[in-house]
Amino acid sequence: MIESAGISGADVAAWSESAPAAHELFDAAGQSVAQFLTRGTALLERLPEPRDRSEPELAAADAIKDSLTRARETFLDQHATALYERLTNDYTTPVRLEQLVYDAATEVPGLTPSRTEMETERARMLADKEGLELAQGLLAAHVLAAPDPGRHLVTTMLEPMPEALEHLGQLRATGAVDLGSARITRTGRAGVVELVNVRHLNAEDGATLGPTEVAVDLALLDPEIEVGVVRGAVVDHPRYAGERIFGAGINLTHLYQGRIDFLFYLVRDLGYVNKLYRGLATADGTVEKLWIATVQRFAIGGACQLLHVMDHVIATRGSRLYLPARKEGIIPGASNLRLPRSVGDRAARQAILSGREWTAGQPDADALCDEVVDPEEMDAALAARIDALTSSGLINAAANRRAIRVGQEPLELFREYMATYAREQAYCHLSPALVRNLETHWNAHQRSV
Image 1 (cartoon, rainbow, N blue to C red):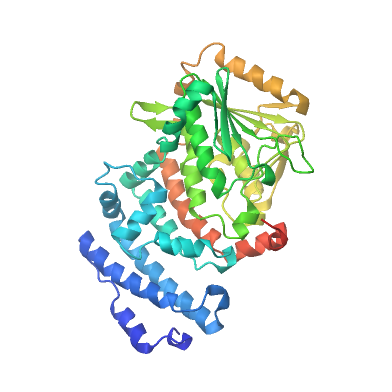
Image 2: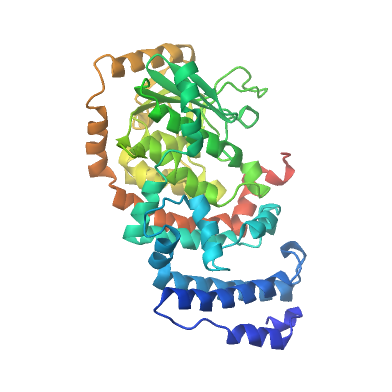
């Protein structure tokens, strides 16, 4: 099959003969699999760009990629823990997932794509990608599935971002930090985190992810802030000009255009979303606070996922709350784990598998909202809730949150969920079905940046 695509039989045979042997020792196994992976990748690179391949070339590419995936899986089945220990100096060096996948590519060439390979992949439309990011999903899945490495990685992702530590002095001195795609403002005893992507109705994408996590970190780090608030910024969209929009979920146009990396999903849910739920892991222990969400107009997709980790949700009457997972073809973050706790298993399945929506103010939406107010009452309702939560002190708030969480979602449960999520979301992200869904339900092929 591979020869039919124009690759010589001698080259195919040489690659086949380099198939990795089983080794108990990590270094020997790594060298063996790296030789096979790099040779196979070199064969793949000799084919035309994915969008330009003939049927025989497409079949050859699939055959090569299937062999590479099996080799990676076999190696990680046996050596994921040893690899993680090597990359983190036996758990003494915290390495975030964004760096881990590239450190792995250096330690075992071919196991995951290099930064150079990813630059080329990132320039392709989603439909034209080679699928290199599947290897990142497999690595993350194996690491998270292993108890010790998985716990260490989850905890690492809960540590403050360096940029947050750099901006903390500014926040404490001025009460505000503008991070571009997100900003934080200290108002009394509350820290208001705003997602600022006004052109796209406060959708999330690769540009918003880092600033949002830094803003959440800052709210948790500032000792003068007792309660965090998540809001959408005022947008300038013609239909909603001058209004706050809580969030439109992932930026589907950018997703279709290949501008959102697969790692976005994992970094988001292991990063700022999990920090909202579990707090920050610092040298002095865990720092967590109560969080309020103010839902205005709609909370779609990822914005709706945020409601699962909030301590209090205020929504304007008529706001739409839904997870368009069925129409998109991806897994809605940790909603599969968390949504059933709010609305029950049957309603959660209806939402995730069949597109059920909720409307704030309707009785069936009460499980997702704590307060429903008219639009003009939102600011007053928020101020009243902040005062109610802070007027008697918050000495027991973190303790109560932890006690609730222990029964609902212990870290081990979350770790195991994320291991499954990493693998399944990688296949969803790279599936032709996702491209078709975006064209059918979003008209993504007709939209501009």
